[in-house]
Amino acid sequence: MAEYDLVVRNGTLATASDVFRADIGVVDGRVVTIGAKVGAGRREIDAEGRIVTPGGIDSHCHIAQRSSMGVMTADDFFTATRSAACGGTTTVIPFAAQYRGMSLRQVVKDYHACADRKAAVDYAFHLIISDPTEQVTGQELPALIKAGYTSFKIYTTYDALKLDDRQILEVLSTARRERALVMVHAENHDVISWLSEKLLAAGHSAPRFHGMAHAPIAEREATSRAISLAELVDVPILIVHVSAREAMEQIRLAKSRGLKVYGETCPQYLFLTADDLDRPGFEGAKYMCSPPPRDKANQEVIWQGLVTGVFDVFSSDHAGYRYHDPEGKMKHGRNAPFKKVANGVPGLEVRTALLFSEGVGKGRIDLPKFVSLSATNAAKLYGLYPRKGTIAVGSDADLAIWDADKEVTITQSKIHDAMDYTPYEGMTIRGWPITTLVRGEVVAEGGEFVGAAGKGCFLKCDISPATAPLGRRTIAFDPATGSAESSKHVDRAQ
Ligand code: DUC
Ligand code: ZN
Ligand code: ZN
Image (tube, rainbow, N blue to C red):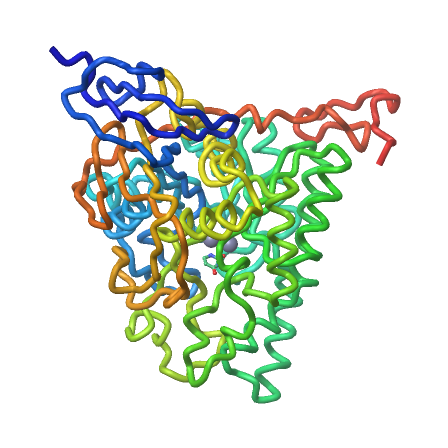
């Protein structure tokens, strides 16, 4: 008589803290036993010679989302999560994106309608806030946070999304009061628009000029400003998709001062460069994202940020727009000026394997670091831990089983998203998640999707311990409560 629904036997398990050999017993989709020679399972998977990690968590991806320029992402919730599953990712956290004038509650309902019968892996939502009215910060956000939407992204750029500093302060102080985590897209809007105008006026409209308009200094300035505003309010923040040394140094400095500033980076900043934006014809459009890929030296800097802990999470920022498609990169023609080309690159499926191959395989990071960057830290930051992001008794049996020696040449024909290109075409990597399980069910095996639309569950996120304020004031006044303290409480060690 089988004791377990599933046993994964003889694997080398890797968590964010340990690497050890053990069997995993699963009942009702949860891990119930981790040990040597556990009893029989109705289904058994032999993981001898394989590495078993928690399923990846991609905590930054855009799915079924209309861009600020009105272009729809290629992937819906089925194709995106099918692709995630095939790349060893078992939880995605995309965005429910508010545009100005929209009710946030309605936005969330609309995204659920897109996701709820389509997702093949589990999912939660961050909120994008572009219209922080009193109704939004005073009523909608507190209610949504209680309902499990505990993180939101704000923008310092894009005409349709950008908040000014007063609005940012309002959102940050709402987050402090309600204990939510604010993710910041940090690029200085005026610098980018001014440079863009000058570039276009001088006749420089090709994709490579997108990279110049989004100067590293614009990223640095907005990162430093966001950190300053968060410090004033005393609220933790996370700077997303950091591309370059300049912004990274701001995060490192903030961390070294004891501030709770978290950092995220993405594959495009490790594996693509500005040279890709300069490919012949309009090809460079395939590599356009914001912030843009930089140069080789910056790739090494970003690796160092992963190694030394400046970055806490490694996400894809998957935002796929097809190339040969009037609804994609070519919406405004095959030679559209860079300002009219949709920003974003795909990466859901290859994110973990790229980090595994070039990080673990090349000796830059060890397995526990790989697990923390690709799964555990996201679960902790966004209130999903320990249900997600680890292999522990009581956790969901979300697992990726790796063949560390499998060589894979990345090609779009083998990728399961709705795209017609991958920016990593032709790149050969070593190590691939050959089996993916969501709550004990196999959803991908041997490079094929074997799951089903609608099997993914919506996850309510808890308030994350990472959102606790420091209790360190820079002025003797708390704008959230109106209380003025004695100035002896003010932190002067800055
Ligand atoms: N930049 C974003 O801010 N979001 C989606 C993709 C991109 O390139
Ligand atoms: Zn962004
Ligand atoms: Zn994004």
